[in-house]
Length: 294
Image (cartoon, rainbow, N blue to C red; front, top):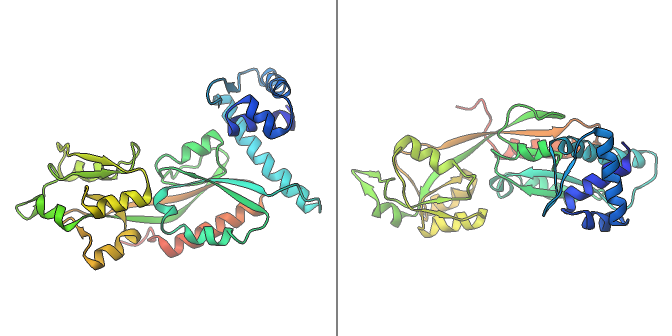
């Protein structure tokens, strides 16, 4: 196993095909194939599942994680020796849309001043972002997973508060005995992975199957709730102005949902990754609730 083989595997996973990987590496597709065949002979297993796009096998995922880690260490080692690699290093991280649209913004502002790094942001639900770490797609992730992914360290960030809200007109149309009728009131859902509204229904209306609208965008979800298309769980930072103005109201009798978040990052001796982790913790301290707060 050598660096050229690992670079070829990483390029295939990132670019999606042998041909695109060859273009990214500046070599022929035949050379990429030869490197992958040699790597597979070394490990005794297939590392790439051919398809559209190509994907790493389980064995390949472990090698992709290593390849991404090696890439970071290689670049930063050359910088320490006074030899700057061409271009900026790339730090891939997974962040949920709700975090990216609210408390995570200070991280982006700080990263705007970094001249040696670009961010490769993967927008992923907090309940599923750890899977990107396991596959080697990212080096770090904001996640609800408290158990460290192999090769990563995990630290608590705080809790993100979601509030159940609706447009006043929608709530008036679906009130029964002074409570919202969750059996009939339409609801919103961010995407198929979003279980927050279902969590509320399980508690307050277990047999309910209300009309459900999908809006897989942070801003679009908010706009749909505000327009009265359906009720939804919004981050408190997202809803505060609308609640103050009366454009949105809380659903009476329905509790907030607190989601504990953690930061998982590869355990690498990387100043760039440590800098990112520090920025994330500072942003979380200013935008999330402490876990010990009632």
